[in-house]
Image 1 (tube, one colour):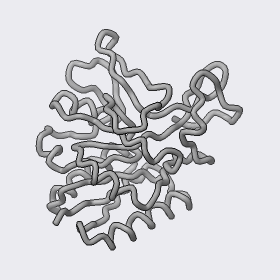
Image 2 (spheres, helix red, strand yellow):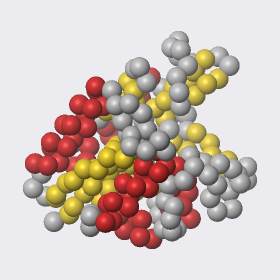
Image 3 (tube, one colour):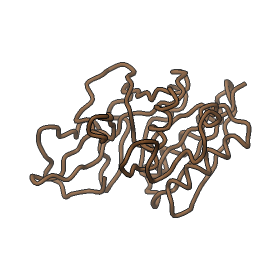
Image 4 (cartoon, one colour):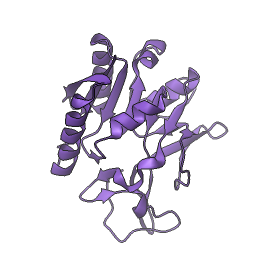
Length: 223
């Protein structure tokens, strides 16, 4: 029987709706007879350190899977079941946040493609796919990882810094994706949840808020 660790890397205070989503996820996972689930909190100031700690604990506990869900995310209670059924080494879901522009704050997915010629990560403007698709990098708000991946990569797995021959600073989630890419490990996205996945910053942003080609009338929000 598979064993999965559900980790919460506390990057900020947990609001009520994400807390309810996490509670429902834990309850459903605990009742699933096809695997055993355990939880792990990490409360350091550094989100990269928290992810690193959770990943390490998933190995120490002999888990087959490690699911990380951030404290500003909400999602359906079948999130884990669906993502595990995809049987991918690394998989997440599209979610959205703001990017400042001179005309306002644009709402776009936290998904990236890497441009080797420019040595830069280009953020995608929208998600049109309806089936699983690959990306070069993604945000870590929802990320399911087979623990064998950690065994294949050198530490640190999650670092706010430079990686390999890339010359720029990356966030800890994109850093992890970059390490996976160099090791030949694909990064997948499951778009089938649609607007049921929300990223909360005073408002639950989802695909319907995507403002590619325009801007929202809301105040600028953190990315």
